[in-house]
Length: 159
Image (cartoon, rainbow, N blue to C red):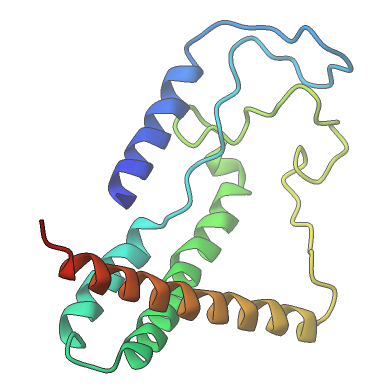
């Protein structure tokens, strides 16, 4: 599913850039000559692969242990690939037809952090960042547990 998400998203990115268009609403801050593609997809394919590889080794474990290990490794692998990739997407090297980071919506002012490719922190302290990472880990563990439970329930359904 993650591979399908990535492939479909990349196809939308490449195809929408080929369709001529111009903004009809104001204010128009960006010179738009074609449909604006969505942002480059998140690199969710890496955590999905890591999830599958780790899951094979811990199949017989307690469901909460599995959820903890799988949630933590998924979050860690996602951060390990997405963080440097996000830095690349903010660099001038990504402003091309494939990564499409130079295609901004018409309503984005040229002085915004998005248009200038400047990082804008949403957490103002290290404690705030740590709290958000803890919440992401907790959500990952809980959703993995829910997914494992749902999968075990689905496996028992018979016609």
